[in-house]
Image (tube, rainbow, N blue to C red):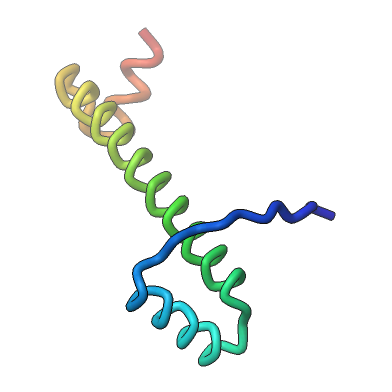
Length: 78
């Protein structure tokens, strides 16, 4: 089981009201809503990093003429 760590954060009043309203509507605590938002932000960040890495290596492959899986297999056999 994970031990919770308490943190104090500051939110603008309108955002605090939105978090509280969302928590109430979803039957969750404010803490759970903030945790969900942070997990979503982390997933989004990781996806962006993955796309950047994928784009980099796709560019490198195109530069070497690797456009298909068959091209890749030929390249790897050399």
